[in-house]
Image 1 (cartoon, rainbow, N blue to C red):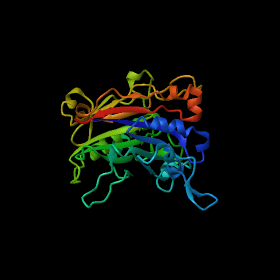
Image 2: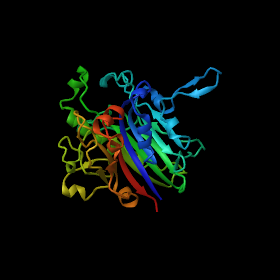
Image 3: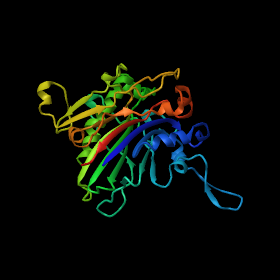
Image 4: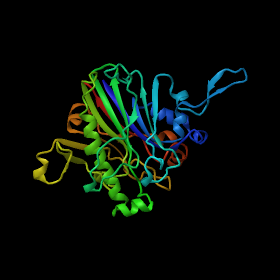
Length: 334
């Protein structure tokens, strides 16, 4: 059976902005997937479920501006808060937008697994991970979201999704600026290094749950980095990163022979809309997975979906949907 996995930066999508966005169009796009990770979902994710109001008779009803009302009961969803507020990470500054992630999945294809205590494992934020300060690594600006999803038709198989929104520009706070001597491009590349060599490997190696037998792990999201093959220019994300068993990134040919993880980053289509809203721009949205996942389940070349065509033109799409195009990875389980 095949499954369509998606990533979609929805550009400051909030409950308040619901009236200005074409949620019918967005829901139609989301329905092309079996599971999708959203970035830049604001306002505690209220746009997902809406709010409950009462009509004149006192009957509770869902508010109009919600994705739930358009996707239907066959979809489950969860909003996650990476806690970008300054009280959590003072050195990054205060993100007053309240940006978070969301996972949405079809209930006839996926379900949340049960842990060894019989408790449902819902998606969560990964706050604990190791960084290598000698390489210039530091805590991510936005900690990643993590979803474990069990296949309904193959309950012994599990997809583990790590969604990210890598830093775009270097925060301007004095304490951060004085602490590091590199710019935003290097910060982006360092954040990817943390995700790939530290977080991915830890998630992939976690086999403590007795109900998980065959896990496959995938990073997906807005990397703010381009693949060289896209032609979009710098900054770049490596198409292949080699990591050894001690979670060190290997560089030279001799070192690479001792590689433990071969991490492949894919999706080379341009996936943002330019400022003039008349063409595609950067190649920021990707998927990353190891050699085993690549050889075992990846079915087709990752690609952007035809979302602009659905809207009619670039300007309408950018105004009513987002400045990012959703991207798709198709996998199959044998």
